[in-house]
Length: 226
Image (cartoon, rainbow, N blue to C red; front, side, top):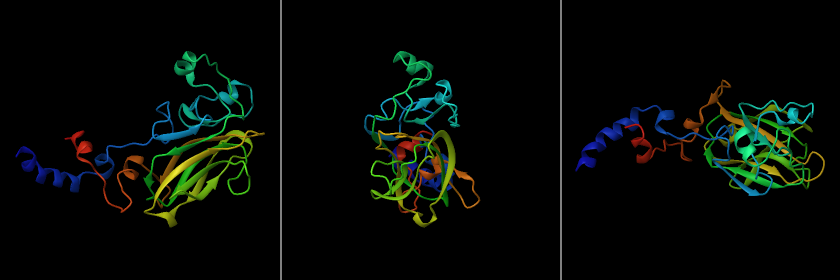
């Protein structure tokens, strides 16, 4: 009885509540959780990720990572910070080298922006042209529709994709490290969708929209606020 009496109020809340609040769901788009929450790893390349701080500079590489925040993916690196890294016996500047391989796949999300931007660095081993690629890919239904690589430098630069043709599609980001040779590693950080004015869209808003373009809000999410 109590639940049935509440239903009209709940429906009203769903209609008027701002979409980014209603979703109550963020995305670990920049690895600032200090772990791989929202991402699924395959094989061993990502076992010691994300990387903490400018580890290339700590090892005297002369190519600053230019990462955002404290954490990022640096697949040559093996330093997880003063807390986790210390427990594992890691020191600043430690590396795992180009040997380990693997992939890292994000949770699914709906494309609602005009563009997507992120930081990428590391090796230049393109998905389409190299039999052993290191790349950042946008996948829809398991098919790679957009891809980027680094430019053989540890320093990351921001890349932008036009994703407007995929609006409403369900997608995933896949970071690929399938190369154990020279520059056989990608660097990656801080991915966003952006609107037509180039303003980044909060991931809470992105993840609150399902593949039909509808607001996807669960009762469990609503209870967090009401």
